[in-house]
Image (cartoon, rainbow, N blue to C red; front, side, top):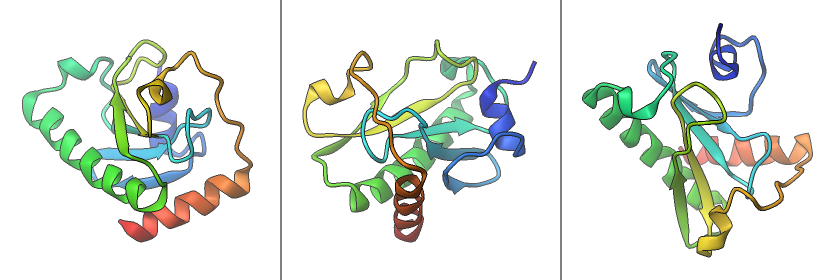
Length: 130
């Protein structure tokens, strides 16, 4: 069965996409820890990040770096934190999260409830920076 992320790749489920190429997709987490919280995935449905072949993993990190730089230009923060949990969706992914403190990347914290208009505003700003 296709993961929710595979359904986003195929367009079956909408997402606020900020970057895409032939191999990867970056889109906003719908329940973000911070404004700009973005997920980066390979388009291929691969369950676990560390089973990606070395070149695909390296290419994914380079893609994520580009996206992180775009996020930093839009969201005031000290860093873009990166997290790999891999349990919540059976599709390899990394979280890019604007942070100012270590505690900002604590997934037990309450998630933001952003209006669709805010997602679109941030999406447009980050796409412009990329």
